Length: 302
Image (cartoon, rainbow, N blue to C red; front, side, top):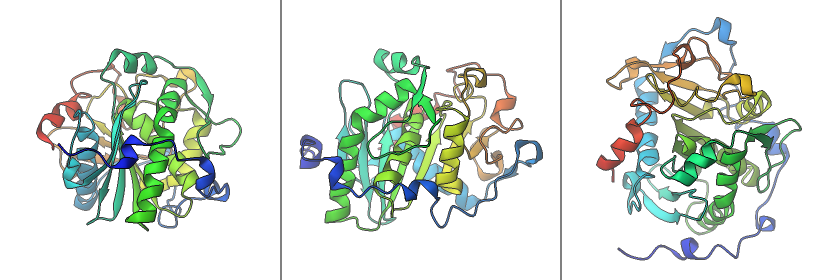
């Protein structure tokens, strides 16, 4: 196996001053996402997705699954830019898809004891991340924030280098499963803060609740229809952290109600994130077989 690019080996040259920050960007959604009409959970009608949306969800699912491999030289056919790994067990990679003009940041979910301990860090804390100026009252899961911030500077440096050298104008994609999905949500906010003029999209699978209602509102305002939070059938992890602890899902949930996966079996839920007719209607059983599907599929995706 050839060595990783220099970006993966040297992360000391990056400083936040190298990237243009924009507070204004955090107050608006991307042009093609901001016109999303948010509906209340009480009036939502769950609608099957189109084949195009299903294909898009499946495509980015493969990146989340590939993050479970120790090293994936060509994740989903893309070019590996950076392999992430550090003492916090926050792992994943940055990849570049030149055909779709996307830079993908895929983050790994819970696999080790350290990750499990992070999952248990349920304290809600202010969202403090490089370049992010979140409104007062925006709170997120302490363990998830620590995991993301442990690799944030590496990711920002890799993305900045790619934009300069070969990926100008590419869309930024964040994706992950389980804890990796929660990290991907915070990564999306951080990337939008640091690359204000770039389009950022977020795809998560089996993501637990990640922050409070203020965070959900903040996130929804930033990304609108550019956020895809996928739940597989009776996956218990998305609802394992209860709303009684102050947590609230962001949108938009795409609930696969049954197997096999197909457009007809995936319903788009209400935009605010807590649709009682979606996966929240199924009692949570925590980490179960429905939650593990992404990890198992890593065996078949290269």
